[in-house]
Image (tube, rainbow, N blue to C red):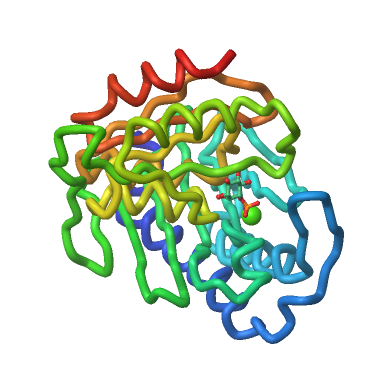
Length: 262
Ligand code: IPD
Ligand code: CA
């Protein structure tokens, strides 16, 4: 790491980039019906693209030689230099419907390890941050996962991929979890879900197909808060099966996922 900027410099860049993306989307939310592309279970907004350009603008100005990887069409991934991993709007469908649970997520990866990350929720006025050498915080205050010891008392968060079809493993996992946990919720933004595990509002988050830009910053925040994260399976093209828990319920949740996926 010695040839690279200090982690607090990187975190400052991540916060500025996430705020640039999120605040742009928030300022322009009356344009949330401007659609670039519609899919069966998803939508791509003009504001997704604009917000990513805002984040990239901040990153390129401060770190002109670094690589960038964004959800919205620029794949510049390169492990030989620091790489900034951006989801300008995570929870686009929520945002498009006027639901406030969405965020902007920016992570910095160096030599394959995420070292700083920010998840910013403009409407909820929450800014989650972490670096690899310091504890995770929300709005400057230390956060910790819950100590709920049993699945029967647990709130578990999950999501459905935009590519969901009849027979998707997400349905099997949802059913198995619903029968064991106190409640399973689909809130609509993976990075927000993972931050909710990090700060103790939920005990676990699982998803059968989630992308690197959704989990890069939030995963670091969760680990630095004291939660546990795990990639259960790499699915290619930055997609993976993923698990984040308060630690105590980790083995239980992993077992349920493994046993319920056909
Ligand atoms: C989606 C959200 C959702 C998750 C999907 C993601 P996007 O990201 O994080 O919660 O279930 O798998 O694709 O498209 O809103 O950035
Ligand atoms: Ca997105």
